[in-house]
Image (cartoon, rainbow, N blue to C red; front, side, top):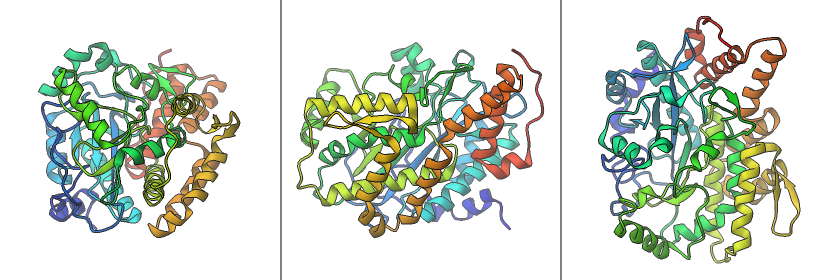
Amino acid sequence: MLSPRLRIRAASSRRFNGFLAFSALSFPHDESAPFDPPAVPRPPAMSAQCDYSFGIEEEFFLVRPHSRLLATQVPARLLKRARAELGESIESELLQAQIEIASPVQCDIGQARRQLGELRRGLAELAHEHGLALLAAGTHPLGQWREQSQTDKPRYRQLVEDFQIVARRSQVCGLHVHVQLPDGVDRVQAMNRAMPWLPLLLALSTSSPFWDRLNSGLMSYRQAMYDEWPRTGIPDFFAGEAEYDAFADLLRRAGAIADAGSLWWAIRPSPNFPTVELRIADACTHLDDSLAIAALFRCLMRHIARRRAEPPPCDAATRRLIDENRWRAKRSGLQAQFIDAHGRSEPALAQLRRLRELVAEDAAALDCTQALRHLDTIAERGTSAHAQLAIYREHRQRGASRNSALKAVVDWLLHATVPAAADAAPPRSAPDTP
């Protein structure tokens, strides 16, 4: 049987080079932009012929498996080989210890699972050959930003020059989901309607309870760190794409941004493709968690598009409630109590049930019902953040030092990110330090 790398390489022209009209997740990064390619005219259609086609981006840390620490220097040949063997969907990030996987345009969650699973395994194989391992989480439990090296590219050098310690501290990984809407649907108006659900989507993804080798007390410290950046978090309500574009152009003319790709909000209209892009989620340790969140967001976008005649609530109180609920998701994850427009508290899991009922028709139409059932698994076992904290507390209760307990968390993360790869090369014990 072919290894994941060889299977992907054999099919690369079909999977990665054939989606030319739209590949929101396989594009080459532009050297002038910090996180995103430059704005270009949006193509009229995606090459995948289906309604609400979608794509998924997953960011990972590269880890030295024996010490469990983040890699400080990553061989340039790793990225070169990864792109040659796995396709152009592999991309570097700001820190050398980060790498991104992006799916081709998708119509089917099952196909996305197969392709992203192969990409995870293929990249893990290559990383192993270079003495590294792949880890999916919003933060690395043992990560220390002062020890990290930035990727040596002009856009990253400029990013550090512009944002200084904020950029150097940006040791976080996320999950991004793109969904294409039908012609005639204003993406910003759809975005407005989706924003009240963003705290729930964050709660489902939380995977960053540790920062700088400490328990942060938050389920998503990544969100706290990301709030240091400008133009992040929940966007304001814009009347539509025209007003949004006018605001982006105002910032561009003032020299504040190069293009709309520098609006790094938790949800936005893609500056390059006819999609709405979800950006609030932490990187998911389990692939099936990523897929369930992507499926839920896709179903929500369909629900919104088919009910677009209903005006969304865009008042100041609604906007501030979304921020309050995002804080609650950041702090408590699935144990959060969200506040509704009437001042009532609603448990996150109750809101999840309500959203699933709301999009049940859309899930059936998009063949996402099975994928959404995995949300029950997340609700029952918790997110990656729950598992990390449970492992940490268990080891501390047994008398382990903080550092040793964090190493146990990293071991679990490595195994859960790519189970087969972790089984093949378990990390050796490393000297314990307090």
